[in-house]
Amino acid sequence: MSDFGTVDQSEYDMSEPIMGMRSFQLWNAVLNSALADAVYQVCRGNTMDRDVNYVVEPSRDLNEVCDLAGLDMWAFIEGAKKHIFKETGVSIYRGRPS
Image (cartoon, rainbow, N blue to C red; front, top):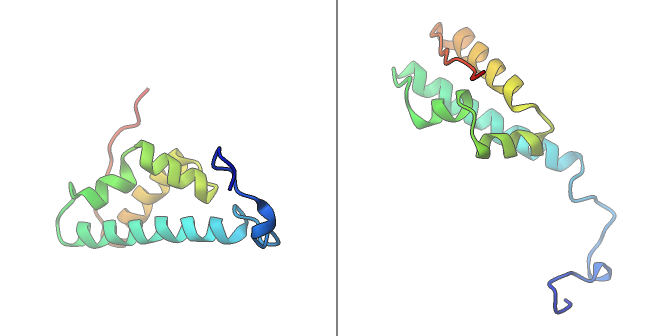
């Protein structure tokens, strides 16, 4: 390592890109897990639970995870609301700010 914290790439196998397909799959799995947690909470009647809020409310964290998964945050939120309704029959609608 240099004094500035940069890594000598010769120390690592660079044949697998860091932000390759596996990374997108990982972050998609994180979002799928979050969505499954939200569905579980809605089934239990906890529509204002933090797991539900995470997938239906915009946030820096959700935006970053969506970006890492190669998804648009707003599209994910709308899809999450539709998925929750399809799975539970409960409408989680919170308006999108103008």
